[in-house]
Image 1 (spheres, rainbow, N blue to C red):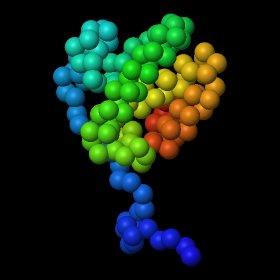
Image 2 (cartoon, rainbow, N blue to C red):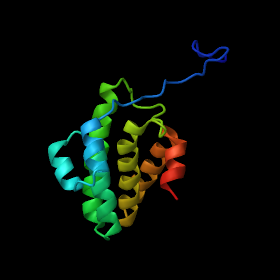
Image 3 (cartoon, helix red, strand yellow):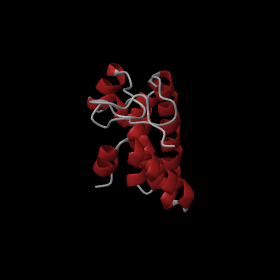
Image 4 (cartoon, rainbow, N blue to C red):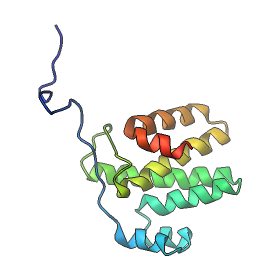
Length: 143
């Protein structure tokens, strides 16, 4: 017998609703103003965005172990925020929603830095998680 999702119907899709993280205007303003991400992370440690920026900077400098550590911190901070926003372990985390980008960038950098240190299983899990969470982020960040 085929299972039918009770939520599916005209105009409705099956599956979890997208998760939209709350805005973090102080963090975003500091980063846009060109503040050092190290200072922003110290001031706003629960935000993923400065950790993603630190990971990207370290990775760009070839400091892949540091990038991995920063990305993992941003990833876990993002998971905490997602759970507080009602996320239950899967479902869309839209790239189009600016506050989600710190988490998605951290997830991408975790995968990239994991690949750089030979952590192939972790890199594959991150790529899959990113693609399932936000195909748009996977496309944008893989360029």
